[in-house]
Image (cartoon, rainbow, N blue to C red; front, side, top):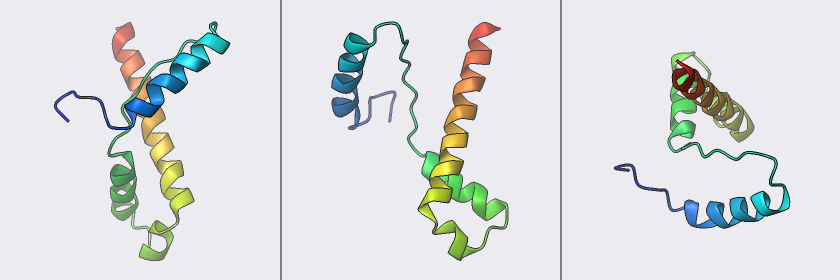
Length: 81
């Protein structure tokens, strides 16, 4: 990591550039979501979720999205302080 961009950024940046050109009034912010799936799985394990249910990718994605949103909101709160 070392504060370097992920490999996915080579695809994300051109998309964001097009999006900003099409809809310039909508601000775009980047948020590093690496490892959120691992964090989601660990959260499920810590919460006692059975192995069969942990294999549900939609559930893992839902928890990952919650972790991403929480991290984003905490970052915004820290920037406002």
